[in-house]
Length: 524
Image (cartoon, rainbow, N blue to C red; front, side):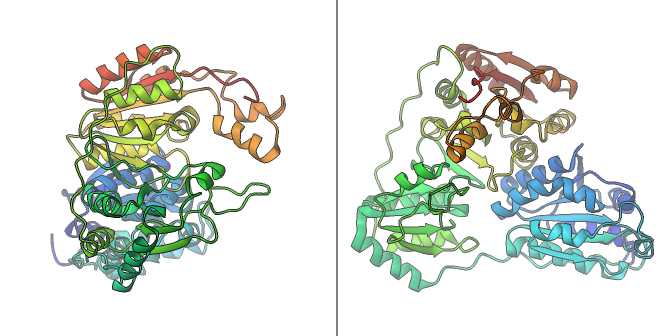
């Protein structure tokens, strides 16, 4: 490729030189120059998603597993808006993504054509960096800047590309700067953490998040816990956590506020590594918004974005903490029997999870007891809904399968959540991805019925309940999956679920299991 090229070519070539090899796309007319450039930069693979929420969620899953940035190609403000929910999750996960967002040609903007929007304003709340390409000559430099920002700030960087900047000549590709290592935490915070542990010992909790949930970091945390009696825990939802047999057990901060307050009830000091200060997901009448007691110490030893692995290993060194005894592997659960409920569902998943599986978990109410039984399961990585915006797990799994080829991916999703981005099944079929999906079909937004009770003090009545239910008509995920090209089966007993999951984990390619839970009665 010559030194002078079109802006679109310079953008893709610059990203490719910076290590971006996959772009998840749902383009339109304004992006045709960027689509054309895919033929000129064969090292960048394009993956089509049928909805922008699939595109952004898949980029999130890809980058979490591949350990390098992914890119998206989105169409103007409305296309970006369709993908913003999963960009919200990616921002909370600090996932490096470069969004390429097409815009009208510069001279066309003043005409206020039907798709004209303030793209920068749409992008801002869901991005760590937003800029626009002023001309084709600036295209390569702006692509390099976007990639640098995505890496440095830890989150989506949005580059707006006017159509004329993309189709015009006069551009040149650049070599983006190499990624820099995250900064080490201040030594004064390590000293303060050492003092806290010396004073409070077992009344201290180490709360891990982000890169502190790698296996290496967890082993350092386990050394600290063994030497001091401190407890270990992880944030409620995590970008990527190493879990399973042979790894330290890290209970998650409970989702519900009252349970989270009890979880922190005897904690006098909280030391955070890559984790935010805990807050309840929602406000409730008469309840405080934070679960940690006001008098408890809350110390960020390593802030999100700092090197939590270095912090944990340095603190373990200050304590002269020896390696703890290897944990005794807990036995696998017995074969579950009876109806499918949260208990039997968790048992089946823990029994059938194979070593190295990537678990994308958004089972909502069906997963309330899952984390305890996953400690019995084979070693695996777990990707979760970091921002709480539902509809993430199917796209996450799609991207994870591409970002970690050769590894099995298992998706756990509530039926309501799956319907936000069910189009991801089509991409899984088209790319022949090794993803098994379990739909926890309870025919309702069950968690919202519980939240109604928490806030209003009573279950939803006959007029309110239809807003929270998914019946009349009953959804058939087997037919939906087959329509997208994915083989599927429905099960309504725990034994059948156990058998179906065992068979699915032993085969390759996309497959869906609809696990039919007994639906809750109105107000249950």
